[in-house]
Length: 287
Ligand SMILES: C[S@@+](CC[C@H](N)C(=O)[O-])C[C@H]1O[C@@H](n2cnc3c(N)ncnc32)[C@H](O)[C@@H]1O
Image 1: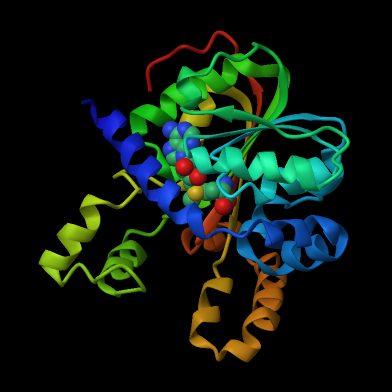
Image 2: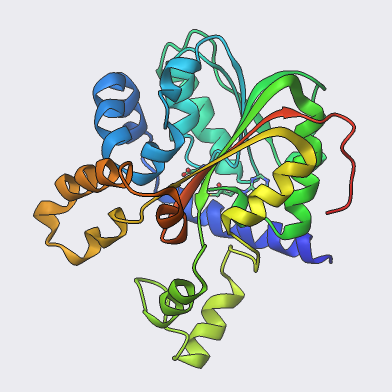
């Protein structure tokens, strides 16, 4: 079994299990209250702030959008409710069930199409999609898989197509080292050696470079334009505050970050939006 295959299997098992607890009613509630949900989430909740940065919700209508690693399908449902023609892919078979149920229970203009299984093995039409989305997805791929994915994305995107990834960012080695020392729910500290080793064996996050520089380096080979927007340099401190101030603080933090120098935001980012535009169709290069 190859390294990338075993990473795919670990991910499939992990997420098939995790998604058994997802309640589709919470997704339906969001799309039934679409504008109030987006109005709040895109100012407060990191992944929505990042993924929908720059008024993305108003750029989706009528677009063919492929979402990779659609997971519980909340984002696929939001994009479809906003009028996009959504194709959602995941290795988890549970994701297919969510889409079936969502299509039955919500009157999308165009129902969501599920693309089952590994994206690399799916037969897709070349030059077909306007946008390819990955939300908290790429950091689940090994470095080799990431390159294979981007090469296939280049073939299925239209010539003026756009890739939009929202991913965790690790741009400070010091903060990264510190992070592994602090235990969080479900993950022991690296200092607890045995527990850490056994946790790591089933962790669906492979060893890889999650820095903005890495995404920039790859993007430059395959796309004409790249844009990386960091998030979280101030928002990351929300954990130090009592729960009742959490959402208020986050909203304030995201506003404040816009006033800070980009260099500082990049160094202390917790996540980033990565945009690649205009694929270089001949770009089969080694990176
Ligand atoms: C952290 S989840 C993110 C889900 C969703 N995008 C979200 O924002 O909640 C990562 C998803 O990637 C999927 N995944 C991992 N490797 C994959 C692969 N090779 N092909 C397709 N999906 C994959 C997992 O099954 C999982 O649903």
